[in-house]
Image (tube, rainbow, N blue to C red; front, side):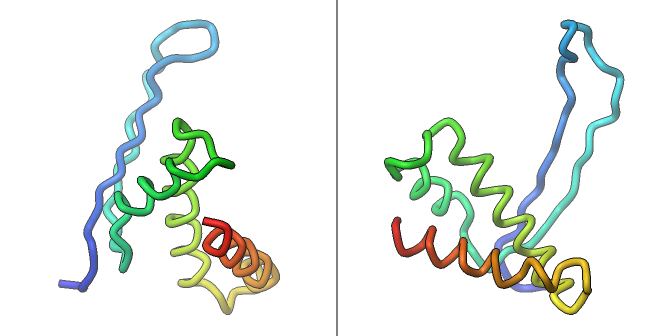
Length: 96
């Protein structure tokens, strides 16, 4: 078993813009992170430049995208973005 914190994400489409209930199947997946993500989300909620209600979206988005970016860092699709993502992460960590 791979070391790290194990998480499960489940995404459900609960309502369309017209108010109807969609029949999309939920998307669910597991992932592993070296970070304890709930702690990161709590830190993001305390930042004055991030609304507490969007902290989870930002934190999860960064962790999920960052993991894929690292895994595919040698791919031409991701290699041009990696330096910018790194700069963003440094700024986020420095100002927090």
